[in-house]
Length: 354
Image (cartoon, rainbow, N blue to C red; front, side, top):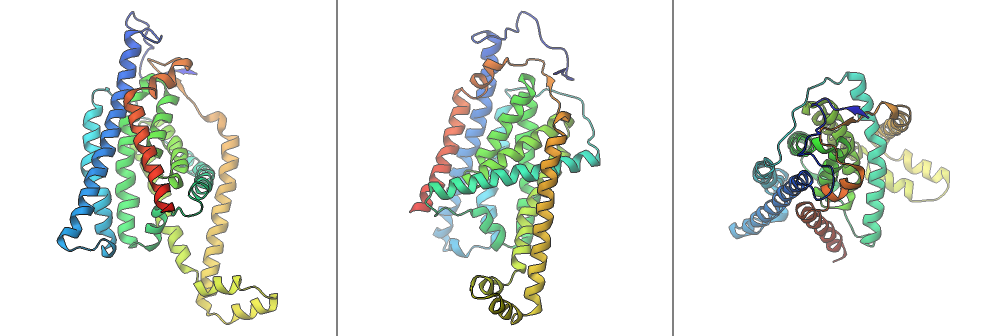
Protein backbone atom coordinates (compact mmCIF):
# COMPACT_ATOMS: atom_id res chain seq x y z
CA UNK A 1 0.00 0.00 0.00
CA UNK A 2 1.31 3.44 -0.96
CA UNK A 3 0.64 6.78 0.63
CA UNK A 4 -2.36 8.53 -0.89
CA UNK A 5 -1.90 11.38 -3.33
CA UNK A 6 -4.55 13.69 -1.76
CA UNK A 7 -2.40 14.49 1.29
CA UNK A 8 -0.94 13.21 4.51
CA UNK A 9 -2.83 10.69 6.60
CA UNK A 10 -4.67 12.30 9.49
CA UNK A 11 -3.18 11.69 12.92
CA UNK A 12 -4.54 14.58 15.00
CA UNK A 13 -6.69 14.32 18.12
CA UNK A 14 -9.88 14.52 16.05
CA UNK A 15 -8.92 11.35 14.16
CA UNK A 16 -9.68 8.24 16.22
CA UNK A 17 -9.95 5.12 14.03
CA UNK A 18 -12.07 3.22 16.56
CA UNK A 19 -15.78 2.49 16.71
CA UNK A 20 -17.67 5.06 18.77
CA UNK A 21 -15.19 7.91 18.35
CA UNK A 22 -16.45 11.27 17.02
CA UNK A 23 -14.47 10.71 13.80
CA UNK A 24 -16.09 7.30 13.27
CA UNK A 25 -19.57 8.67 13.95
CA UNK A 26 -19.00 11.40 11.36
CA UNK A 27 -17.77 8.86 8.80
CA UNK A 28 -20.80 6.64 9.43
CA UNK A 29 -23.18 9.59 9.08
CA UNK A 30 -21.63 10.47 5.75
CA UNK A 31 -22.08 6.95 4.42
CA UNK A 32 -25.64 6.99 5.72
CA UNK A 33 -26.31 10.32 4.02
CA UNK A 34 -25.08 8.84 0.74
CA UNK A 35 -27.45 5.91 1.27
CA UNK A 36 -30.36 8.25 2.02
CA UNK A 37 -29.60 10.19 -1.16
CA UNK A 38 -29.64 6.99 -3.23
CA UNK A 39 -32.83 5.77 -1.54
CA UNK A 40 -34.51 9.12 -2.19
CA UNK A 41 -33.40 8.92 -5.82
CA UNK A 42 -34.98 5.48 -6.12
CA UNK A 43 -38.26 6.48 -4.46
CA UNK A 44 -38.65 9.66 -6.53
CA UNK A 45 -37.84 7.79 -9.73
CA UNK A 46 -40.35 4.99 -9.10
CA UNK A 47 -43.06 7.39 -7.91
CA UNK A 48 -42.73 9.64 -10.96
CA UNK A 49 -42.48 6.67 -13.29
CA UNK A 50 -45.71 5.17 -11.98
CA UNK A 51 -47.42 8.55 -12.08
CA UNK A 52 -46.53 8.89 -15.77
CA UNK A 53 -47.62 5.39 -16.72
CA UNK A 54 -50.84 5.67 -14.74
CA UNK A 55 -51.59 9.09 -16.19
CA UNK A 56 -51.01 8.28 -19.85
CA UNK A 57 -54.08 5.98 -20.20
CA UNK A 58 -56.20 8.81 -18.78
CA UNK A 59 -55.44 10.71 -21.98
CA UNK A 60 -56.38 7.74 -24.14
CA UNK A 61 -52.76 6.68 -24.75
CA UNK A 62 -52.26 2.91 -24.90
CA UNK A 63 -49.02 1.90 -23.18
CA UNK A 64 -48.37 -1.12 -25.39
CA UNK A 65 -48.46 1.12 -28.48
CA UNK A 66 -46.00 3.74 -27.25
CA UNK A 67 -43.03 4.44 -29.54
CA UNK A 68 -39.69 3.33 -28.09
CA UNK A 69 -38.50 6.90 -27.47
CA UNK A 70 -41.68 7.82 -25.58
CA UNK A 71 -41.46 4.67 -23.45
CA UNK A 72 -37.80 5.33 -22.57
CA UNK A 73 -38.49 8.99 -21.85
CA UNK A 74 -41.39 8.07 -19.57
CA UNK A 75 -39.45 5.35 -17.75
CA UNK A 76 -35.94 6.86 -17.49
CA UNK A 77 -36.64 10.57 -17.84
CA UNK A 78 -37.69 10.99 -14.18
CA UNK A 79 -34.47 9.25 -13.09
CA UNK A 80 -32.07 11.25 -15.23
CA UNK A 81 -33.78 14.64 -15.11
CA UNK A 82 -35.10 14.80 -11.53
CA UNK A 83 -34.09 11.94 -9.22
CA UNK A 84 -30.34 11.91 -9.94
CA UNK A 85 -29.80 15.69 -9.58
CA UNK A 86 -31.83 15.62 -6.35
CA UNK A 87 -29.63 12.81 -4.99
CA UNK A 88 -26.45 14.75 -5.80
CA UNK A 89 -27.77 17.76 -3.93
CA UNK A 90 -28.32 15.56 -0.88
CA UNK A 91 -24.82 14.11 -1.17
CA UNK A 92 -23.21 17.50 -0.65
CA UNK A 93 -23.26 16.85 3.09
CA UNK A 94 -20.36 14.46 2.40
CA UNK A 95 -17.58 16.67 0.96
CA UNK A 96 -15.68 15.46 -2.09
CA UNK A 97 -11.95 14.85 -1.81
CA UNK A 98 -9.98 16.67 -4.48
CA UNK A 99 -7.16 14.72 -6.11
CA UNK A 100 -4.75 15.10 -9.00
CA UNK A 101 -5.90 14.06 -12.48
CA UNK A 102 -3.82 11.47 -14.29
CA UNK A 103 -4.02 10.43 -17.96
CA UNK A 104 -4.74 6.86 -19.04
CA UNK A 105 -2.75 5.68 -22.06
CA UNK A 106 -4.53 4.10 -25.01
CA UNK A 107 -2.91 0.70 -24.42
CA UNK A 108 -3.91 0.59 -20.75
CA UNK A 109 -7.42 1.78 -21.65
CA UNK A 110 -7.86 -1.05 -24.17
CA UNK A 111 -6.46 -3.62 -21.73
CA UNK A 112 -8.87 -2.60 -18.99
CA UNK A 113 -11.76 -2.58 -21.46
CA UNK A 114 -10.92 -6.14 -22.55
CA UNK A 115 -10.68 -7.20 -18.90
CA UNK A 116 -14.32 -6.21 -18.53
CA UNK A 117 -15.40 -8.96 -20.95
CA UNK A 118 -14.77 -12.07 -18.77
CA UNK A 119 -16.01 -10.24 -15.67
CA UNK A 120 -19.29 -9.38 -17.39
CA UNK A 121 -19.64 -12.83 -18.94
CA UNK A 122 -19.32 -14.46 -15.53
CA UNK A 123 -21.74 -11.99 -13.96
CA UNK A 124 -24.19 -12.49 -16.81
CA UNK A 125 -24.13 -16.27 -16.39
CA UNK A 126 -24.68 -16.01 -12.63
CA UNK A 127 -27.53 -13.55 -13.09
CA UNK A 128 -29.27 -15.64 -15.77
CA UNK A 129 -29.00 -18.88 -13.79
CA UNK A 130 -30.32 -17.33 -10.58
CA UNK A 131 -33.12 -15.52 -12.42
CA UNK A 132 -34.34 -18.67 -14.15
CA UNK A 133 -34.01 -20.82 -11.02
CA UNK A 134 -35.77 -18.40 -8.67
CA UNK A 135 -38.51 -17.58 -11.19
CA UNK A 136 -38.88 -21.21 -12.34
CA UNK A 137 -37.88 -20.26 -15.84
CA UNK A 138 -40.40 -17.44 -16.27
CA UNK A 139 -38.13 -14.40 -15.75
CA UNK A 140 -37.42 -12.29 -18.83
CA UNK A 141 -34.67 -9.72 -19.29
CA UNK A 142 -36.59 -6.57 -20.19
CA UNK A 143 -33.44 -4.68 -21.16
CA UNK A 144 -32.53 -7.39 -23.68
CA UNK A 145 -36.02 -7.30 -25.16
CA UNK A 146 -35.86 -3.51 -25.44
CA UNK A 147 -32.45 -3.58 -27.13
CA UNK A 148 -33.63 -6.25 -29.59
CA UNK A 149 -37.03 -4.84 -30.51
CA UNK A 150 -36.56 -1.10 -29.90
CA UNK A 151 -35.73 1.59 -32.40
CA UNK A 152 -31.90 1.48 -32.82
CA UNK A 153 -31.49 5.27 -32.85
CA UNK A 154 -33.48 5.70 -29.65
CA UNK A 155 -31.66 2.82 -27.98
CA UNK A 156 -28.34 4.38 -29.00
CA UNK A 157 -29.19 7.82 -27.62
CA UNK A 158 -30.56 6.52 -24.29
CA UNK A 159 -28.53 3.36 -23.61
CA UNK A 160 -25.21 4.34 -25.20
CA UNK A 161 -25.01 8.11 -24.66
CA UNK A 162 -27.31 9.48 -21.96
CA UNK A 163 -27.43 6.49 -19.61
CA UNK A 164 -23.66 5.89 -19.29
CA UNK A 165 -22.88 9.60 -19.05
CA UNK A 166 -25.27 10.25 -16.14
CA UNK A 167 -24.65 6.93 -14.40
CA UNK A 168 -20.90 7.52 -14.42
CA UNK A 169 -21.46 11.04 -13.17
CA UNK A 170 -23.34 9.89 -10.08
CA UNK A 171 -21.90 6.44 -9.29
CA UNK A 172 -18.27 7.16 -10.06
CA UNK A 173 -17.65 10.90 -9.77
CA UNK A 174 -20.10 11.74 -7.01
CA UNK A 175 -19.89 8.59 -4.90
CA UNK A 176 -16.20 7.76 -5.21
CA UNK A 177 -15.09 11.38 -4.86
CA UNK A 178 -17.01 11.62 -1.58
CA UNK A 179 -16.07 8.21 -0.15
CA UNK A 180 -12.44 7.78 -1.26
CA UNK A 181 -11.11 9.49 1.89
CA UNK A 182 -12.15 6.39 3.85
CA UNK A 183 -10.39 3.86 1.61
CA UNK A 184 -10.01 3.37 -2.10
CA UNK A 185 -11.11 -0.28 -2.17
CA UNK A 186 -14.11 0.53 0.02
CA UNK A 187 -15.21 3.44 -2.18
CA UNK A 188 -14.98 1.31 -5.33
CA UNK A 189 -16.96 -1.58 -3.82
CA UNK A 190 -19.71 0.69 -2.43
CA UNK A 191 -19.98 2.47 -5.77
CA UNK A 192 -20.18 -0.81 -7.72
CA UNK A 193 -22.71 -2.28 -5.29
CA UNK A 194 -24.96 0.78 -5.48
CA UNK A 195 -24.65 0.75 -9.28
CA UNK A 196 -25.54 -2.93 -9.57
CA UNK A 197 -28.48 -2.69 -7.19
CA UNK A 198 -30.06 0.21 -9.07
CA UNK A 199 -30.68 -2.05 -12.07
CA UNK A 200 -33.37 -3.78 -10.01
CA UNK A 201 -33.05 -7.30 -11.44
CA UNK A 202 -30.74 -10.29 -11.17
CA UNK A 203 -30.12 -10.41 -14.90
CA UNK A 204 -28.09 -7.20 -14.67
CA UNK A 205 -26.97 -7.01 -11.05
CA UNK A 206 -23.93 -9.26 -11.14
CA UNK A 207 -22.40 -8.11 -14.40
CA UNK A 208 -23.17 -4.47 -13.53
CA UNK A 209 -21.44 -4.95 -10.18
CA UNK A 210 -18.38 -6.48 -11.86
CA UNK A 211 -18.29 -3.76 -14.50
CA UNK A 212 -18.67 -1.17 -11.74
CA UNK A 213 -15.53 -2.47 -10.02
CA UNK A 214 -13.46 -1.91 -13.17
CA UNK A 215 -14.99 1.48 -13.93
CA UNK A 216 -14.53 2.52 -10.31
CA UNK A 217 -10.86 1.56 -10.41
CA UNK A 218 -10.39 3.52 -13.65
CA UNK A 219 -11.93 6.63 -12.11
CA UNK A 220 -10.03 6.15 -8.85
CA UNK A 221 -6.66 6.06 -10.61
CA UNK A 222 -7.32 8.88 -13.07
CA UNK A 223 -9.93 11.12 -11.39
CA UNK A 224 -11.12 11.78 -14.95
CA UNK A 225 -14.68 10.82 -15.75
CA UNK A 226 -14.03 10.65 -19.49
CA UNK A 227 -12.31 7.25 -19.27
CA UNK A 228 -14.92 5.33 -17.29
CA UNK A 229 -17.65 7.05 -19.31
CA UNK A 230 -16.07 5.99 -22.60
CA UNK A 231 -15.70 2.39 -21.38
CA UNK A 232 -19.31 2.31 -20.22
CA UNK A 233 -20.50 3.65 -23.56
CA UNK A 234 -18.50 1.07 -25.52
CA UNK A 235 -19.85 -1.77 -23.37
CA UNK A 236 -23.44 -0.58 -23.85
CA UNK A 237 -22.85 -0.04 -27.58
CA UNK A 238 -21.86 -3.67 -27.94
CA UNK A 239 -24.72 -5.00 -25.83
CA UNK A 240 -27.42 -2.60 -26.99
CA UNK A 241 -26.57 -2.03 -30.65
CA UNK A 242 -24.02 -4.48 -32.08
CA UNK A 243 -25.25 -7.74 -30.52
CA UNK A 244 -28.96 -7.15 -31.36
CA UNK A 245 -27.98 -6.17 -34.92
CA UNK A 246 -26.03 -9.42 -35.30
CA UNK A 247 -29.00 -11.42 -34.02
CA UNK A 248 -31.28 -9.73 -36.55
CA UNK A 249 -29.02 -10.92 -39.36
CA UNK A 250 -29.85 -14.55 -38.56
CA UNK A 251 -32.83 -15.78 -40.59
CA UNK A 252 -35.35 -17.54 -38.29
CA UNK A 253 -35.81 -20.12 -41.04
CA UNK A 254 -32.13 -20.97 -40.70
CA UNK A 255 -32.56 -21.78 -37.03
CA UNK A 256 -35.61 -23.87 -37.83
CA UNK A 257 -33.60 -25.81 -40.41
CA UNK A 258 -30.82 -26.51 -37.93
CA UNK A 259 -33.24 -27.58 -35.20
CA UNK A 260 -35.45 -29.79 -37.40
CA UNK A 261 -33.22 -32.82 -36.90
CA UNK A 262 -32.71 -35.66 -39.35
CA UNK A 263 -29.59 -36.83 -41.15
CA UNK A 264 -26.68 -34.58 -42.12
CA UNK A 265 -27.73 -34.73 -45.75
CA UNK A 266 -31.29 -33.68 -44.91
CA UNK A 267 -29.99 -30.75 -42.90
CA UNK A 268 -27.69 -29.78 -45.76
CA UNK A 269 -30.58 -29.95 -48.21
CA UNK A 270 -32.67 -27.67 -46.02
CA UNK A 271 -29.83 -25.17 -45.73
CA UNK A 272 -29.30 -25.16 -49.48
CA UNK A 273 -32.94 -24.28 -49.94
CA UNK A 274 -32.43 -21.02 -48.10
CA UNK A 275 -31.26 -17.82 -49.73
CA UNK A 276 -27.74 -16.43 -49.77
CA UNK A 277 -28.77 -13.78 -47.23
CA UNK A 278 -29.45 -16.48 -44.64
CA UNK A 279 -25.98 -17.94 -45.09
CA UNK A 280 -24.44 -14.47 -44.93
CA UNK A 281 -26.28 -13.74 -41.69
CA UNK A 282 -24.98 -16.95 -40.19
CA UNK A 283 -21.48 -15.96 -41.23
CA UNK A 284 -21.83 -12.55 -39.57
CA UNK A 285 -23.00 -14.21 -36.36
CA UNK A 286 -20.11 -16.68 -36.50
CA UNK A 287 -17.53 -13.90 -36.94
CA UNK A 288 -19.06 -11.90 -34.08
CA UNK A 289 -19.14 -14.95 -31.82
CA UNK A 290 -15.51 -15.75 -32.62
CA UNK A 291 -14.49 -12.16 -31.90
CA UNK A 292 -16.26 -12.17 -28.51
CA UNK A 293 -14.71 -15.52 -27.57
CA UNK A 294 -11.30 -14.13 -28.49
CA UNK A 295 -11.89 -11.08 -26.31
CA UNK A 296 -13.07 -13.36 -23.51
CA UNK A 297 -9.87 -15.40 -23.67
CA UNK A 298 -7.72 -12.28 -23.94
CA UNK A 299 -9.50 -10.75 -20.96
CA UNK A 300 -8.84 -13.79 -18.80
CA UNK A 301 -5.16 -13.73 -19.73
CA UNK A 302 -4.90 -10.01 -18.99
CA UNK A 303 -6.62 -10.42 -15.62
CA UNK A 304 -3.99 -13.00 -14.69
CA UNK A 305 -0.84 -11.32 -15.96
CA UNK A 306 -1.81 -7.72 -15.13
CA UNK A 307 -3.15 -8.31 -11.63
CA UNK A 308 0.07 -7.03 -10.06
CA UNK A 309 -0.37 -3.69 -11.80
CA UNK A 310 -3.50 -2.97 -9.79
CA UNK A 311 -2.52 -0.30 -7.26
CA UNK A 312 -4.30 1.04 -4.23
CA UNK A 313 -3.10 3.87 -2.02
CA UNK A 314 -3.61 4.61 1.64
CA UNK A 315 -6.42 7.15 2.02
CA UNK A 316 -6.14 10.14 4.38
CA UNK A 317 -8.81 8.69 6.71
CA UNK A 318 -8.45 5.00 5.90
CA UNK A 319 -10.92 2.82 7.78
CA UNK A 320 -9.30 -0.17 9.49
CA UNK A 321 -10.32 -3.59 8.15
CA UNK A 322 -12.67 -4.51 10.97
CA UNK A 323 -14.61 -1.23 10.68
CA UNK A 324 -15.24 -0.96 6.93
CA UNK A 325 -18.46 -2.93 6.46
CA UNK A 326 -19.96 -1.72 9.72
CA UNK A 327 -19.25 1.90 8.85
CA UNK A 328 -20.08 1.88 5.14
CA UNK A 329 -23.00 -0.54 4.92
CA UNK A 330 -24.44 -1.06 8.39
CA UNK A 331 -26.19 2.30 8.69
CA UNK A 332 -29.77 3.45 8.19
CA UNK A 333 -29.25 5.10 4.81
CA UNK A 334 -27.38 2.28 3.10
CA UNK A 335 -29.64 -0.38 4.61
CA UNK A 336 -32.69 1.52 3.36
CA UNK A 337 -31.32 1.79 -0.17
CA UNK A 338 -30.33 -1.89 -0.24
CA UNK A 339 -33.74 -3.03 1.02
CA UNK A 340 -35.57 -0.93 -1.58
CA UNK A 341 -33.43 -2.37 -4.37
CA UNK A 342 -33.91 -5.93 -3.11
CA UNK A 343 -37.66 -5.34 -3.11
CA UNK A 344 -37.40 -4.27 -6.76
CA UNK A 345 -35.47 -7.45 -7.56
CA UNK A 346 -38.02 -9.59 -5.71
CA UNK A 347 -40.87 -7.85 -7.51
CA UNK A 348 -39.25 -8.58 -10.88
CA UNK A 349 -38.98 -12.27 -9.98
CA UNK A 350 -42.54 -12.52 -8.63
CA UNK A 351 -43.94 -10.70 -11.66
CA UNK A 352 -42.45 -13.42 -13.82
CA UNK A 353 -44.27 -16.10 -11.82
CA UNK A 354 -47.67 -14.40 -12.14
